[in-house]
Picture: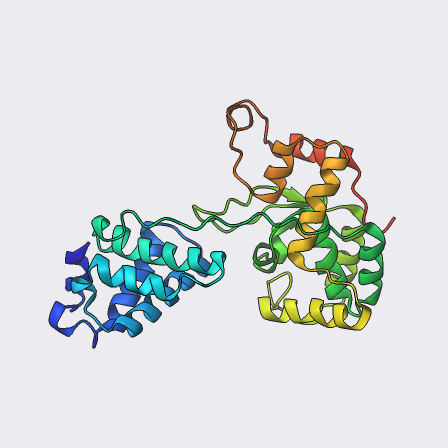
Length: 290
């Protein structure tokens, strides 16, 4: 991989001046070779850019000690932040540069288990009632009834929605780290979603033409006004909890949420066809507002 770097004019003696070039090649490597999604690519590139700005050493000359010193400066940060930093560094030096020995031995932090309370249905009803726009109500119900992640919902196009079967089937290829399969939404979400789309005046093909930060702002604004904290991630957790209470086996909940099944039973002996998944989903009878 070092040869690849030099092909774009990146030489050890000119490393710092060509930082942007190597970052571009690293981004391309993550995107094409590793098939990572754009958010992960962006995160990795940002991590390496900060590191190179900090150590100010040619990447070809960076030693394990340099990496250790840089990680030491970040050792007091939140475990999730530290994990993202180390993940980007491993991707760069081990996978892209082919210098596995530089990152051997560095362990990811153990993240303490935090049990956050799951919102009650009454809290969700109050939060939903406080949303002013049909777009926001439709987005809320899609989060709550599909189990999808925030970015997965925001990346959906209108064409990904099958109203006949109330099914969500993303048309874009998924990355190797996140696996969005088929998910569904209930009749409550269907009704508000149809109304929202019927009143759309723009030609944007995206289902919800919003940036992630804008979505967070919408939820935070309602939370400040009503004292009820609900987030897209919280709705995903509520979905999992409710489906479990409704008797849906964990392996199917994992499938709806795009998580890779871990057990042999789930991987090799479970039917994940669209018809079977729809039967499981409909039988559960998930409701948010009733």
